[in-house]
Image (cartoon, rainbow, N blue to C red; front, side, top):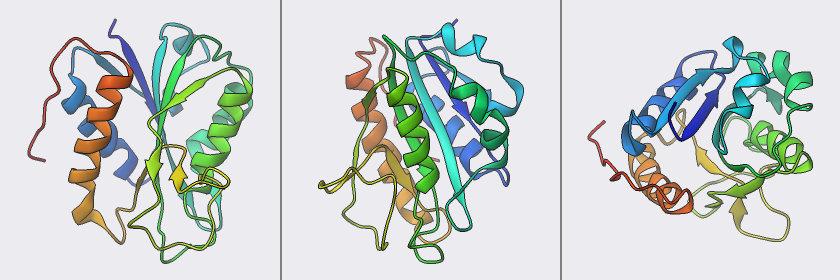
Length: 180
């Protein structure tokens, strides 16, 4: 078993692709990747360090596999666990709901005891409102990616965020900056 459990939900493949890009950077022997559609609550108990990936659909809706798992995630204890989040959304098409699903997931897991790492600056994004923005701060609760409008920025954002997660999780293995 690796040190980190990474759980994602993906309809069109972008959130899944990012999951494996994170795994490449942190190490395939360090990160176990799971599709949320194929897990139970039990898998979360095996990890003290967790990364959760979720996308926001349309007008602030949760990705479908996460939506089906929502009742289960509300029952998972995150006490003693360190959790990082990443979210995907479309800041121009849905600027009033940018990354709302990540914000909603954040609220559930914090309510269940999670310690959050990996906040991300809001600078460089153009949106009107987001449940993923920390109130009163210029930070998102996790890494913000927009594969629809800013795919050319994803690699640099992943490199920087993964370096921060590497430090936050105190990983002993080297960080791998890959050319993806």
